[in-house]
Length: 72
Image (cartoon, rainbow, N blue to C red; front, side, top):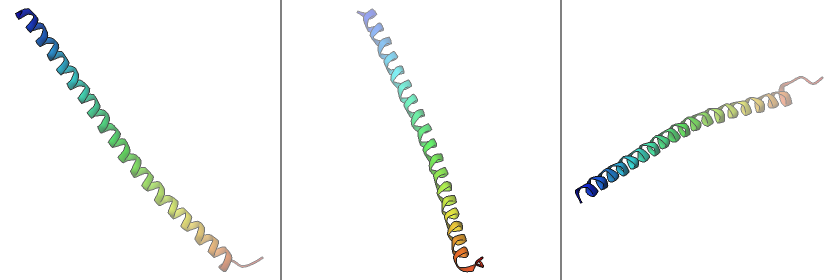
């Protein structure tokens, strides 16, 4: 019996180690995904701001062409 208990204990410890490694792996993946998502959000905010500025400049140029530009 003691030999079976020793083997069962080693198997149990191996399963605990495997579970801990799986949790650490998943935690690492989650951290990486959250970081990538934050970087993506920041990039999309910069792109949205640049797009708004571009559209504002285009609208300003169109207004200037319609009202202020001399006709040829």
